Length: 124
Image (cartoon, rainbow, N blue to C red):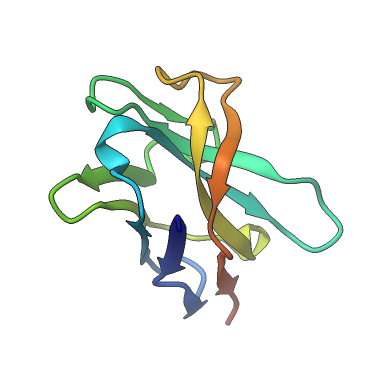
């Protein structure tokens, strides 16, 4: 059974940082492109960042460029999202998923496997 588990969310003050983790079991993350998404209450889901299987390609949404960093440790079967200078409007549930196309890009979309998400709340 494939399972994704996100962790690392929580309450952080504006300008603060969090490091999210996406740990997988039941499949080898190294063979998949993995993307992070977020969804705030009453808003549509949006893509945040994506990394290709061989780490050659990464993609960041415009709002994430320069502040967020995606990385992967295939030996640990885990993908990370480092988020800095967080803003209150970035309060949302953050999800990881396998995605297509495998080279990422600005139109990447979730594929077969999702996690339950981790809540990120940016508030003073």
